[in-house]
Image 1 (cartoon, rainbow, N blue to C red):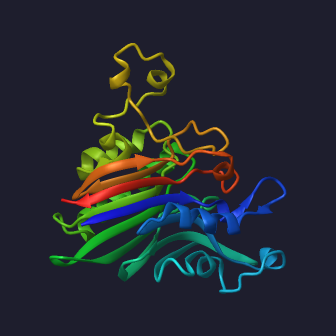
Image 2: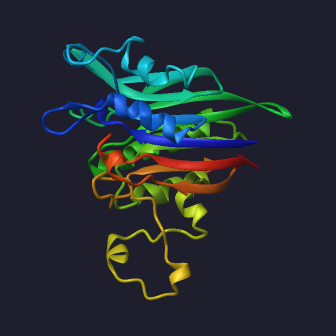
Length: 271
């Protein structure tokens, strides 16, 4: 069974200091990505101020993004304010059963969540339950470490050890410290590193130093931020129970104007 997944921080559908509305472009981006399951971060599902500037004929922001493409969705509200709220969402072409959002905020200034859902994939051999986790970690290192600890404990207690698992989102983990924790504690692989056939070097100093080995062995990484000139590896897809066929980040000016992040796309196959 083959599956295309993507993770995409859409920055609430706006760009720049003037908060230019880009949600229509994000909708076009989702159609171009053509994934079976998309993990979205910073979905501003309700914004009464923005509603004065943009009309969603299908209702909320998430309704608008899903119309015509995704019948199934799960939304986890993280930050709530007088004029609206935003959070993480999982949209899917496959049925989504139970889902629940967990508050993993480390302090009051950063409201973060972990959205867990179970998707029912129908294949030739019947229905396969795949556990999906969408998360957005904090900007402070100690927050990310604690949030990674919560994620590890959650998977160990709530996800069957043999169940296929996809963990995706914006980890804000440019130093790749959390990356090591998740690999070691959960036994998952990171899609971009797996696709390139070796573990990506983790230290920033290593990435800055010139590569002296064979060109064919040069480590390749999925840089997604900032979209105008992607340099940092903030967006990741971690897997258990899947083979990785391809991982890519779109390129081009139109993509850089849709959000401050580029989407990360992975073509997978259930083992």
